[in-house]
View 1: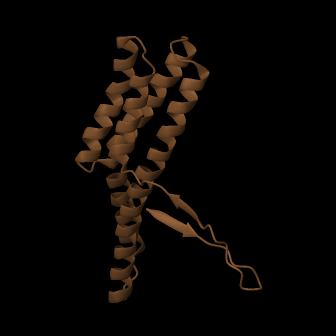
View 2 (view 1 turned 180 degrees about the vertical axis):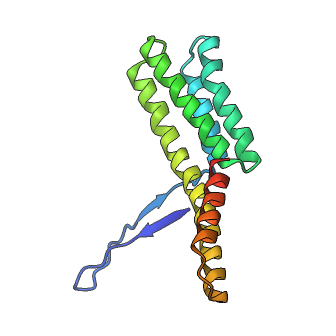
View 3 (view 1 turned 180 degrees about the horizontal axis):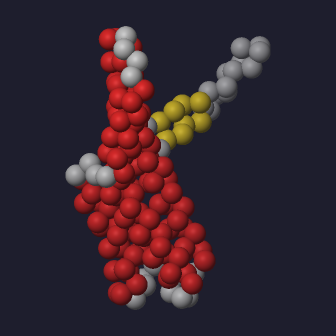
Length: 153
């Protein structure tokens, strides 16, 4: 994706050299694979590399099956591994910060997808309730509990 930025002043004079900004939007799976590539670039001992990459590979598998909550759980397992490796001196503070920073952007995207689905279900249920004009607090509570349980799966 790219944006071309050109400036024009109040006199109508345009900048003859517009600036172009471009970027690539990664899916959560692509961003997770990029994180795995970053770990490879650190040239860590094989055991350290494997323990860091295992939860990420599991997360990719979950993402490929649209199991976003399970993927988030794997991302949390990865963060636990990063903390453990930092504490034991197997990762430098800079490496740990880089891995966390890359993961947080992936987590935000995946969590947004989970909440989008959850809120979508809630809005549909509220629309049904308004369409049929029958308030039912007990039913609403049961629906909310069902949606919450679905979100946690």
